[in-house]
Length: 509
Figure 1 (tube, rainbow, N blue to C red):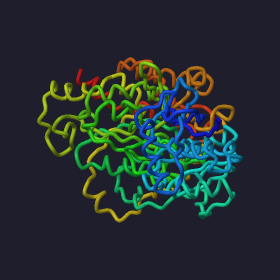
Figure 2 (cartoon, helix red, strand yellow):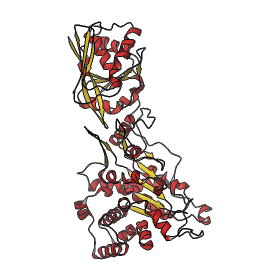
Figure 3 (tube, rainbow, N blue to C red):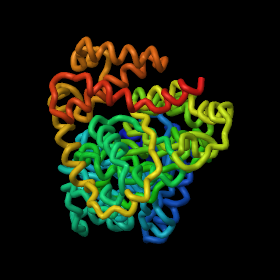
């Protein structure tokens, strides 16, 4: 006799339906085929113990379990539950009429309880796409699975509850969380930052156009303080973005994801000792790295030159393609990586180059060597490079009210709406920073005066073609902030000002 149950295998941020076929034959052997890994093979002992401790009968006959499609490696302990239910069904210990309508995931303990597992959200999304009526999940994963609408979610704390549902159709209902996304209040606000009006302006431009940003300044100037406030001036996550971000956190082993919908844009700040694998993602079973965990949010690299060169260089491809591709001998996995790169660094090893009060102790050679730790191709991919001056005493002691993050965010949302209309036939998260060559020609036409100005800057600072594109994109955002259809000369002039490292490197050369 043959019985089929259904589960899923993670493949990057998505999952694949796995059909589990359980067949009883003559003999006493236990066979499992279909490329299961060791953790799947070990399910045999967990299931036998769970049956014994719950008064269930483990068939004393030959059991063959096939997991299809057979060419995909099956990994993880989430197959315990569907395998166990298949064995119970084929041995006539439960009603099998509902098996075709429900996908099942869950690791079994020896006492039959069903343990929390990772990746429930993307599995539930895929179950809905595959047309399943519902999904049976561990009780601890219920809130995560219930984020997906229009699919029945059955929570179960032990195997007995699953059997009861399949036989009777009843289960213990749990109140699920509401889906609407509400931005949580944060204690980090730009109104706490004294002075630095030009730098705040650069932050607003970066947020408005989705531009990458690097801050160059001495210690104590407020670089990290302002960087931490960037997520709060970015637009609210859409529901699709929130689900995608939550799915990444669900499959990651680096973060303690609690199953709730992620409301805030991610802010990831990896230490400068991080390896290139931890940054980009990988491992024997590829998992998302920091740049994917920053998807739809901000990746902040403080003290940029202190990072390993290899780690920095792996950023180049994701910054262009907005995805990370992790390749292995037999397969490759893609993780989304549409993040804003926000970096900070000192202008020199001692940190006081061009400081108005403190003398720099570095030679030109030391400064050049320090700056060369960040490659030119990587700097080319950073749209806005701005110097952060030290804050004066008069600014620190001023009682003048500073502009709040809310006020800045309102303007950012208005500018993003202009871009949304511009790219209305494109994907929803398009912005000025993602324009291609044809779009630059279409949306960034220049007057002769503007063209002459940018030509002079390119010749004087020896800028690359990519830097030219970045200037146009930033100028387009500045024009949008001014509600201007055409890019004016002063928009180009301001965009050129945001190439600080290009200027420093030019004058040191």
